[in-house]
Length: 166
Image (tube, rainbow, N blue to C red; front, side):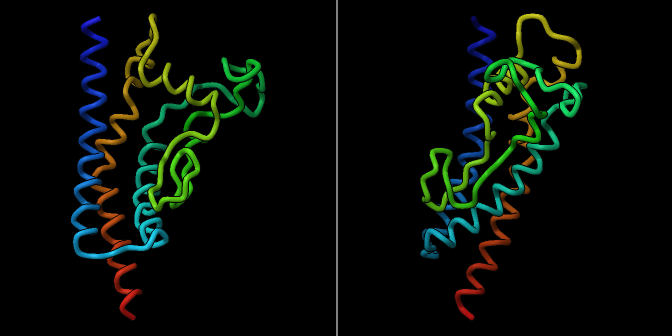
C-alpha cells in the first residue's frame, strides 16, 4: 500500500514538473504575444515532436517479432501487432479527445497499447530483471525530454513570431 502511494506521488510529481515547466513557458509567451490556435499548434507540435522522439527512445521493446507472430499479448481479441514504441502518436494542435485547441497531446494510438503500457511502465507482480529496468520509462522520458521540449517550442515560437512580422 505505501509503495503504491509513493509510486503514485512520484508519478504526479514528475508529470507536474513537466506540466509546470510547459505551463510557465506558455504563460510567459501568452503575456507577451497573442498566438492564434494555428500558431499555438505549431509551437506545441514542435514540443510534441521532441517529446515523442525521446519517448520512443525510452520505450522498451520486447524480443517478440510481430512481423511473424500476429497473436501476441492481451490486446483486443488477444491480438497485439506492434511494439509499444511503434504506437506513439500525436496530431499537431489536437488533444487526446480530438479537440482542436492548439494544444498537442502525445500518446498511444490503440486501446490495447494503453493496457500494455500500464503493465510495462508500472510493473506486475513477478518481474524479470529486464522488466524491473523498464519500470517508469514514461516518467524517465518526461524528465529527459523537458529541456528538448522547451528548446523546440522556443525555437518554433521565434520562427512563428518572425514570420508574423515579415
